[in-house]
Each structure stands twice: as structure tokens, then as C-alpha cells.
Amino acid sequence: MSDKAELVTPNAVQSITLLGDKVILRPFIDTDIGDVYINWLNDPDVVRYSNQRFRSHDKDSCLDYLASFINSTNFFMSVRSLSNERLLGTLTAYVSNHHSTVDVGIMMGDKSVWGQGYGQDAWNTISQWLLQEQSIRKLTAGTLKCNYGMVKIMERSGMKLEAVRKEQEIVNNQFVDVLYYSKFNDS
Image (cartoon, rainbow, N blue to C red; front, side, top):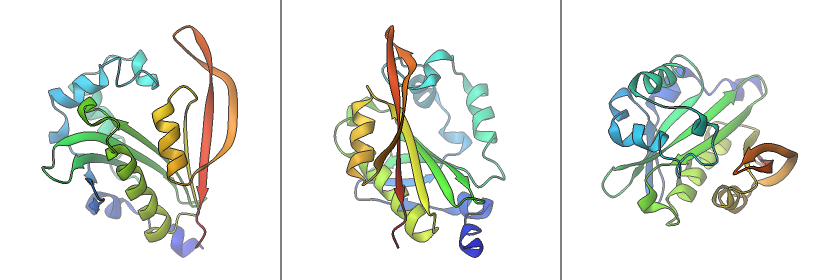
């Protein structure tokens, strides 16, 4: 098992490109930080279920976040349209090689593609790659109960509800549960 867990290396992270049916996933780079991306992070609709909603973002804060991935086994990927390579969103994967687990998150910033399967395709693509090619034993993710789109993405990908933190956060002056999902590598 330790040999498999060592497959996720900083060099592997920097060089991967993954193709889905609708999206291409590749490392997020500094030139991806432009007005479009920064506007997503400051758009209340895009970040309404994320703790990013409590921050104001600018180029420097985005560059600092990107720098946190350098020389780590964690992934910060751009989600792009397969047809024209337009930036649609981002995806993160926080890898624990010691435990052979990964926690995944996604932000689809381009609202014009919401509900069209791009987020699901990105999620399935990274999940399958991590579980099959990188031999991760367990994939995890969490979201607010009121984030119905994210709940659907996780459930459609075969993830199962593992835990609930009751009334953990406040959204629109309402207490909201945080749901944690997981999927084990069955191979």
C-alpha cells in the first residue's frame, strides 16, 4: 500500500491533464488569475455556499492561494470547456499520502454552464483518476445541506453520505447542516 500512496507526487500534480466528456482539467496557473476568475470569487451567487463569501478577493490573494499548492501533493485544477478551452471553474484535491485519502472540492464560476453537466463531468473525471490511476483508497467531500447542486454531484458520482454536522453553519440567517460524503476505492 505504501508504494501506491506515494504515486501522488508534486511532479505528478504539475503535469497532469485529464479529459472528460465535456471538460479538460489541467493545473491552474498564474495566468488563469484574471478579472473573470477574481469576479467569480467576489460574486455572491458563485460563493453563496462557500466560506469564500466572507472574504474579498484580489489578484494578490489569488496568487497567495495558488502559491500554497507549490511543492505539495495537493491539486488546484482549472476546469475548462473541452470544445473551446474556456475557463469554467476550478477544482481542488487535498491529498493525504499517509492515509491514501483525498478531499475534493469544486467551484463552477461560469454561471452560464450551471445545470449543464460540466461540474458533474469534472467531478467524475478527477474522482475516477484519483481512485483508479492514483490508487487513492478513499475520496471525501463536504457541502452545506442547502447546496443541492453539490449534493447531486456527489450522489451521482457514487459517493455516500458518511456524516452530518448538525446546524454547523449559518446561511441567510438559518442554521444549516454540513454533509460529508465519501467513496471508497473498490478495486
